[in-house]
Length: 367
Image 1: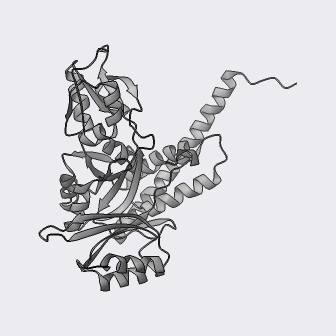
Image 2 (image 1 turned 135 degrees about the horizontal axis):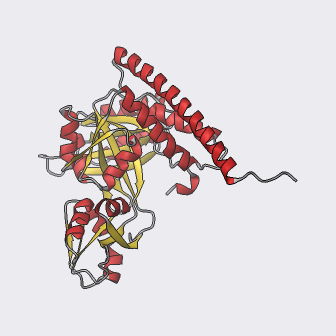
Image 3 (image 1 turned 180 degrees about the vertical axis):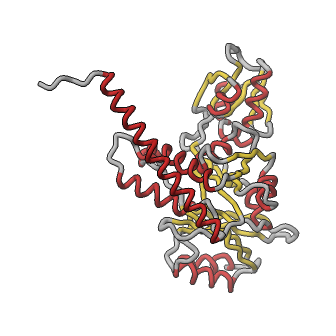
């Protein structure tokens, strides 16, 4: 019977593989630098979400374990991020301060090789990118519990920026306090959206404790860190950043609590990835059947609508602008025909971009 390998032998095998990985990663990095030189000469952008999606799809198809697709994607996200930083360091604006879910979404999309820049508001994120102080911006657009983020949709009406990618982030809220402070808090603070997502839990668990809205979950964590009488609702990332104790976790009222973020930039439209979304803004005349007439065009082309939202059209009472998410790419023949009909029947149309649709790396992670 063969003798089992000792732990020292197994570790020596890991050390050998680590050295081989290092050589291969550096070889990959040198190729990335050459690609960056080609892009610089042609004026192409460094960040290519359609290419990244194809890379992840090929990895998932070839993966035989024991690493899950989720773990593999996390590893290669950092590999891609590090190689991109060699081509050109990317500056990415997110809704700050540091420690928010927005920062978590930016990291999920760009990895730790990007320079993440906190902005004080959604308008500030758009401003940073429009003025060239950031290459990309990451903005929240909707939550599965509380619905759309109106500020983001309103800014799209006037902004020249386009959508380059989407990020779906599972949001698990925690109750945080200063370490060692387990007594009932005198005040609970968090962002308005987070408080709304935990409304029933708060009513059951702390019915007599005052609740106060603050500018962000990170600000709530900061207040809890500085005042032992205050508890914050935020994520584990904020708990780690501010060295707080988690006294309750997964306190959101609905288990499938997901926030969708969009990556915006002035870049040219992304090529087709094979699994895309297209987002469109439009307004229709204030008359019976107007909305039906434009949506009919997508139904005839068998284009699925995954989102439809309305916002008041500023300065025009009782008129609205509609936000659509459509399955497919703007270059698809059916999409072109449907958008041509929309152009004829709507008061105005603005295509916000075509971009790779988000897919959870593991089937069990789909929400």
